[in-house]
Picture (cartoon, rainbow, N blue to C red):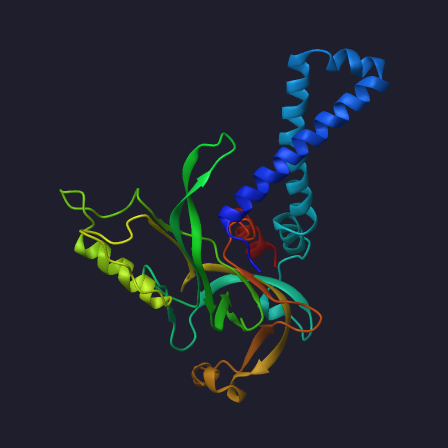
Length: 297
């Protein structure tokens, strides 16, 4: 069960207040048993500085710890610990990391908002809501209304070799490269949303199964669309287990067999290793790394 941003906001406030009072109680207790700390705690300024510093630093430390052991930090280490391989050097059942140009396979997907052809997309639709902050004041914030991921098999080309990426049960990480909110709305001279803006919104919403709500002059103006795609000719990396297969045995690869390509390296999720695919910059080798890789292999 996923928790939306508003619930996380109130949970964070509750935990923050709880942590503050716990630290305050601990500070008073410690000041009675330690002369040095008691002298420090006696100053009201010192008390506030200690409490506020701990309330800020402890959550930051917990987030860093989570990232290192379970989040992005672990993912980055998992990728970087595995040396990048040439597709042509891969062997059956090897766990390898490859990187190359994405090549679409069969009919591509169409991204909801930008209508770009792609092999995978991530799309988030958010609406503005009102919530109360720690100062008991009302504020506006974005809350996710729907989050959609979709993908289909595609090819990665590295020099003269190809890898078939089976995205079924794979972890596909697509970074958002389009953000459309109030700063980029298309409006006419009267401040209303243009016909083009309304039509693009309606198309995006209907593509994810939501019927647009119409108001006077504009509908649902406070919307936010975030979208990322894996599209042709984009650099993509994959980490997982694979094996060599014959193109003549797979109907979807017959066109490659007709082009004289007899074998292709197939990567997919296995019992031993989940396939991870991404275009995130923090997982891709940079330009210099690609140059060094080409010259050292």
